[in-house]
Amino acid sequence: MPENNARTPEPPRDGAPGADTDGMSANAISGDGTSDGVADGSPAAPQSGRRSAAPTSEPAAPSQLFVWLKEVATVVVIAVVLSFLIKTFLFRAFYIPSESMVSTLDVNDRIFVNLLVPEPFSLSRGDVVVFRDTKGWLSTAPEEPNGPFTWVQGGLIFVGLLPDNSEQHLVKRVIGLPGDKVICCDDGGKLTINGSPIDETYVNGAEEPQIRAFDVVVPEGKVWVMGDNRNHSADSRSHLESNGGFVDLVDVEGKAAVIAWPLNRITVLDNYPAVFRNVPAGG
Figure 1 (cartoon, helix red, strand yellow):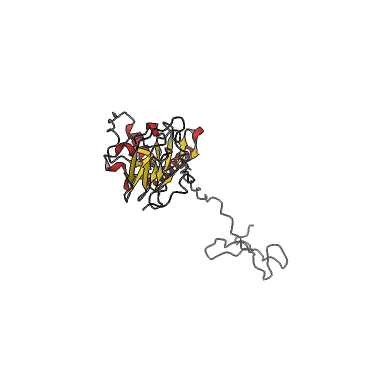
Figure 2: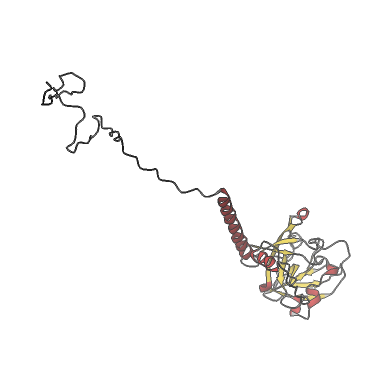
């Protein structure tokens, strides 16, 4: 007959598999019936029937086009800001509309003007300068009609990416500084500064300069300017009735430093120090 009572299993013998030195099972069972883990400390395997948590989906990476557009926009903004700062404090672009400075500057040359002259750095004789026409040397420029992209051009000029094509600026060479006595001309037809004749090697040699007599002393805060193309330059000599022909230093935008365009004319502009080396200081 079958036994009514279940047979009690015998404990494992010493040395048998599944028994440790104390005769207990290697896998301890917690009071709630779940395994605490294997003897070596590694976590217990998940119980069958339980599902692991679904992996968290990572956010989609930004498209390569968006990243590229962001980088381009950053570069453009930095370039515009730098150009504005350079144009405001260091260099400004201008173009040459007339032949008054031939052969040093040709019509439609683009030049960069150093804005650190005459302040904080002072002018020297022979410097080529750009100055505002506050004395009416030029006729009033006609107002150009606005086109569909006029605001774009104006904005690029404002930030310094395009040269200022306003004709209300002039470009000439400084001949006399404050206190200088400038006379045209001595018996040899040469210009004299403080009694010293100068050999003007920068003057356009294609034509013999016409003699236009004058005798002036440059007042404080002003300069006397003349064009290198002497026969085609309405400079200080032509405006003696307006401020004595002098240009106020406060109207000087800066010193023309380089020709930047066209590419075949890129050069640093010279102020010919050798021409004025022997000129004594003015009174």
